[in-house]
Image 1 (cartoon, rainbow, N blue to C red):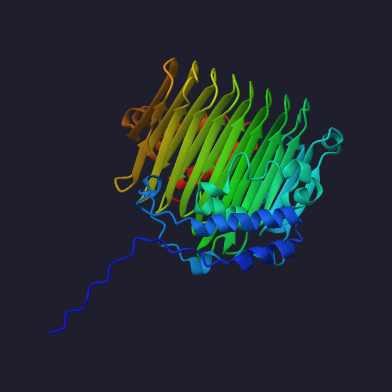
Image 2 (cartoon, helix red, strand yellow; image 1 turned 30 degrees about the horizontal axis):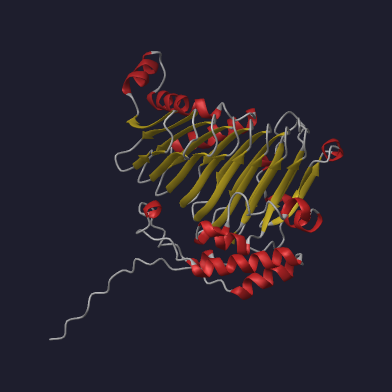
Length: 448
């Protein structure tokens, strides 16, 4: 009798089928300057030398993405017939009243709407798509694009992004200038496949700006991939408020690297929201580089169905007298799973630092799972650092109290969950944006 050998499932994730020729073809199609084409090829060499992340890697052992169908997700989306009409109208509303400093809207990687205040331009502020910026503002982009914040050597997906990013936005605010109105970016995909977007924000000394980036995509039954990067460079005494809100379709796998650097006495208020996607693996790192730098990271997420969200945050105190404050709040229902891994780190002799991180988790079904893993790595002896992770279910007492006032149970539960997230939603400085986020979360709660 012949016994068939049992086939073992490989632990090595498959890689997308890109080649060096794809990198060169992308540069040629965009008519890119030589320095950018060369940097892409160099990043590709890094990509080829790095392994795909696997469950044997500590920061990936809770996130298995091997079921992604790269045959569908690797095809780079082409803007065939892209128009602004394909973007949901709510995403295009002005952020404050009927005014904003600028709007950049992308559909399938192509700019479909561009607005920029002449007053802002008159101050030397630059707000444009990244490919245009690479051609017209080399002296500002080249020293900052994937050289100081996110770098190709950080991992397989960071290197792939550096080699093949397709579109992005560049915001630059010169020294001592203040953008009093907010900037708005909308990145929307209508087709399945791969999207590789990039956000680069550069604030020079004593400058100030606020920017909101919306990520969204149309429903599909095919697998999609978003391989993105965000770089926030905040100069000495500069002040940046950055809001990134993600609502991908349910077939999107996001692999993103996001990093901010804050100079002496600088301030960053960084807010992220995760609602969509099938699987999300997002690295978010805050580097406090200058004496007196301050950074606040706020995150909210709501996973339902079979969504998997994995947020990996790092607060690095690279100078004395720096302050970091992180709060992530999330909820999960159905068979969803979430992971938050956080770390506060100080270098030796970085005294008088104050670091705090907290993860608050609300479990709304017996089959959902939420993991919170805070951490400290302190190499100085005069610090104030603390961390916490809490988990709970919907408390019956406040629900009963509301029901005793004549409120139906479903409405009472909705109000309690709204209250759980309200602290973070109130940090978003735009009322209409808060309203649509609250509506999106309520739709998840009631199963719409």
